[in-house]
Image 1 (cartoon, rainbow, N blue to C red):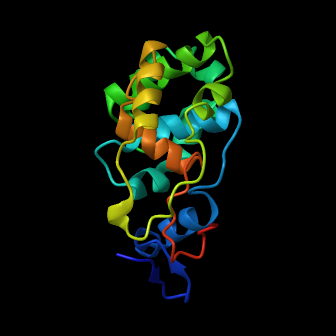
Image 2: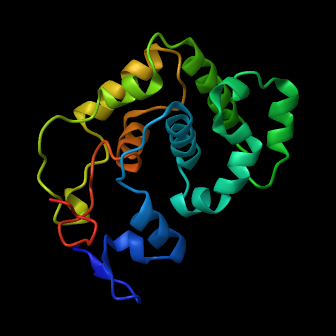
Image 3: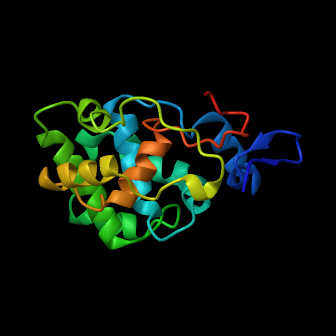
Length: 189
């Protein structure tokens, strides 16, 4: 399936025209390079929370996540304890999944224990060189050798809820890869 034209006359990747929240995210964030510890930690957490759910659920709860997780500042989240877990489990503004909440806290602690900046670690897995622009959604993989390597490296460093599929979604969300379809207005090459 090639890009579709939305009600606003803009050709986007098909999912980008399925809801206004998606169009905004598609047009302004997805595939745009993201750097900085807090921003990358946030995306890592959100991708883990999305696992098994629709991304629109996460987008619509993003403000709640930011409030609940101290603005996704890893040093703050790393200090969360049992009372914070219970507070988060009662917070309807986020996805209340104990395993995912614990993973966010675990991952904040793993960020603090890194021997290199999170930005440097994650971006070291960005594919080198030009990749063919996808022509249809079927051309976009769910995992790649790079996302598999990223997942393995993160797990080795104590991160949780970071499988190859989640890592590839993170790579797409943070611009490490650009999977906008060739017919999408956001396609850059």
